[in-house]
Length: 327
Image 1 (tube, rainbow, N blue to C red):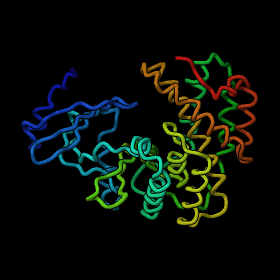
Image 2: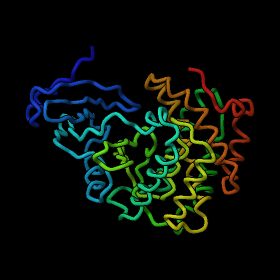
Image 3: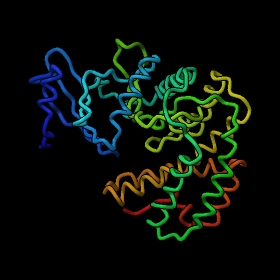
Image 4: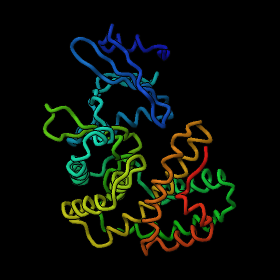
């Protein structure tokens, strides 16, 4: 039986939820803990987040999204000093799990998720930090800092950084307007809401790391999902839907490939770190899916400098098994 953190009853009592049933939920890749809270006249979700899990940022982004008519959980109560946030419970229907049982509805669910991004990208960019070159490079370097050492690979780190600078430089002058980038917009963080919210209604969670950046980034997160197979055919169809609705200018597909390669390189590094540093080996099994998407992105002509680095530094036999790592 899971031990409840100290202070949980005092917080719930102060928030008006005295005597509520508390059910711990399975965690994710973070160090946040979640509890489903139920009482006779309602239910809620309780988050316990240490300071380094950015509870203030979660509140700030949630309120910004709600103010701009994007369906984030409503905030019921908070105690940031002790890491408690009580929020609306979106239920159990994560898009990923729901589609496992309803594969016939895949296209409609992804179309609704695309439409949410189209809507989000019509809003002001938001009061968030910029997704700048330093951030892109810091994230990409997780690959050489964690994944390569895990495989015993001696790689050219200086050349890696230079290749990424060259590939990502065009983003600084892109014609697409900066938008709020949620950064983890994928099928495990999209909730399918109850019928009273409207047919096909979706809500978003896990957005505390939001930045201001390129509109293609969250598309990559959704359509090159580390946790769920998205066929190249569905990816192409949903990209076409976004391009048509958002009236994208020339060069958008190249930027999508740039950000796809950057994100997937980062994720491979993060999954290696989760195994080595945090003792969470289950993420290693997702690396081949991420690697396949990375290889497709590297095939774009605009990725040539980074593709050449991979050719020179990552062994062919490792790429043939899609970067798989043993726990």
